Length: 172
Image: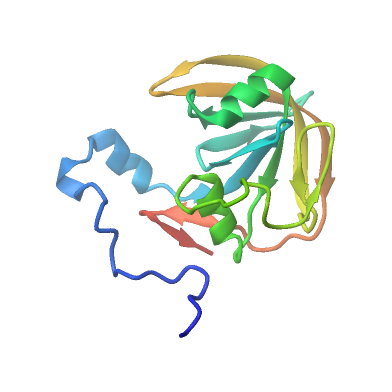
């Protein structure tokens, strides 16, 4: 028996994916924009893969992200008022899929990997870069919640290639 390589696919395409012609025009536009793949975590612990996000420079700097209102992450972040944002890198595809709910997580989302506890939530121990944020605002935005956090602390380490999501696939 041969092990499955990270990122390997059984099918050339996703047999459950919505056909392109049946997708909304807005969803098709979004699919044509490369998006960073980030991991948002909070006390609980809870976490979620988020690619619809951006960082706004200023005093203070802010992080904005579109979050599923029904996610465990949103419930936990709303209760704690804080969260951590970690950009993911090539090689983190299975972590991204696990926190997106696309891979099984026996023992829970944080059972695999090595984690550092922070005041904002668990952060992968090997994370080169992450930001600790205080939740300051939320509002409905499309079918999601637009969460706004003020960056209170940041670690900027090595600058590996980013993991991107484009046209339904991870890219580097």
